[in-house]
Every structure is written in C-alpha cells, then in structure tokens.
Amino acid sequence: MIFRHFLLKVNEANAFILACNDTREAILIDAGDLDNAIPVFLAEHNLTLSKVFITHDHYDHTDGLPAVVQQYRAEVFSGKDAIANIATRRVRENAEIQVGNLVGRVIATPGHTPEGMSLAFPGMVFTGDALFAGSVGGTPGARQARQQIDHITKGIFSLPPETEIHCGHGPSTTVAIESRHNPFFV
Image (cartoon, rainbow, N blue to C red):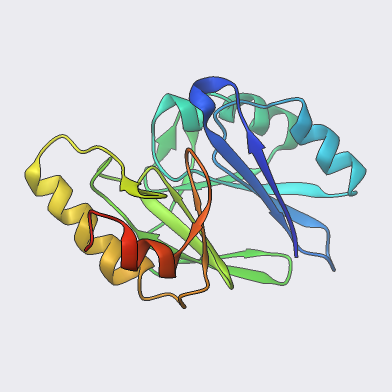
C-alpha cells in the first residue's frame, strides 16, 4: 500500500492518496484543492488516479474537485449525487470501493453534514470532519450531534483499536486513542 498525506492551503484541510502497490491505481480522499504536490507525487510513484472519495460537501474538501476530474478523469464517490457540479457515484453504508487490490468500505458518519461518509481500508479510516483528534465536527443542532456520535461509536470505533484515523483537519490519531480519550465519547 502506498499512502501520502497532503496539507492543503484551503482552511488547512487534509487530503490523502492511497494506492495499490501492484496495480499503481490510486484514490484521492477529499479534494479541497489540486495542490501542486499531488500531481508530482502521482508522477514520481507512477500512479494512476482513477477514483476520488469525498467525505462531505464543504468547500474546503471539494473546491479542487473540478480540476482533479478534468485532469485525471477520475470517478467520484460521495454521499450525494453531485458535488461541486460534478456528477458522483452515490455510496451508502457498507458499499465497497476497490482501488487495485485494495478494498475500502464506506461507513456512514452523518451529523456534521447529512451526507457525511467515512472510508475504511485495512488499518486506516478517513473520517473527513466527522471525527478529529480530540474532537468531532460541528453540527447544526443537538439531534445531528447525537446522530454523529452514534455513527462514530458504531461504525468507526468498531474497527480494530490500532486503526489509524485520518481526519479532515489536524493530526491523525487511532481508534484506541479516540474511543478512550476523546471527550465527546468518555
């Protein structure tokens, strides 16, 4: 597995590339911007960006999507039918996304946004703004906050404790750390 984190200028959002060693197929998780480092990384590692997964529909995770799709013709997956005027393949809970020989599973994490989705691969999960190191994403009300906490508890915290959590902003963490020490869950 090939993995790289990119810190974007737009709102200090994170973007990630995950790729299969065997096929060189890659997926981009969130596209707040098409930072120059992304095409350089893809070229240096001889990777083909074939898919994009959008965790939620906020500008700092989607504004680069038109440029990414135009340059790479990548298929876009999200919890909505369209993001940033780009048609997407709408995914639901437990849908699988294959990247070469890697298979990711979609975990619904609504609350921060109604269509919020996370994507889990063996050993790692990408949570967007649903879950951060030591915090959770803001919600418009108490009902959405409870919904978000419930989905994280059932979906994310059911993953093995050593699973790395890669968030939409800030540092990465693990299921063990967040399930035991995040103040929103203890």
